[in-house]
Image (cartoon, rainbow, N blue to C red; front, side, top):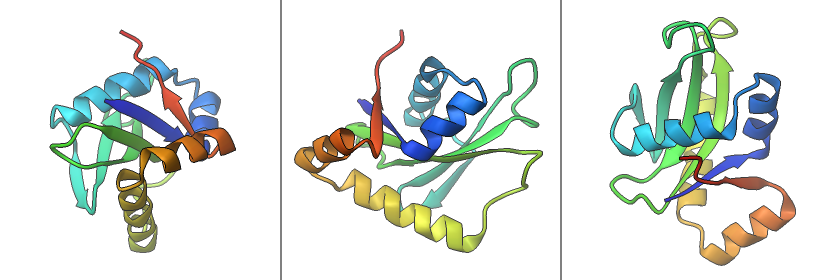
Length: 126
């Protein structure tokens, strides 16, 4: 399984002090079916606990993944539950399109996105 994060999530995780190892574990949980919501169109919502807190008041992470294919997964957007309750329908639809586009991309297109700096691959942190 290859795990990616877009530029926005990279900045968000750095600001919130969330290491790639936590994102990697989150991706493994998603592949195992541990998600809060299947938002359709390869888009899933996962709750993640804040350090020193629980999942209920933690973060919401939206990622693209095509189950049961575990070839690649991408972190697309995240927010703190106390910052906003949810995302709008327009945002959800836009993220679905991005998820579907990324999941259906060729390996050459993914390599181009990595070289361009649009996405970063998260390495296994086991």
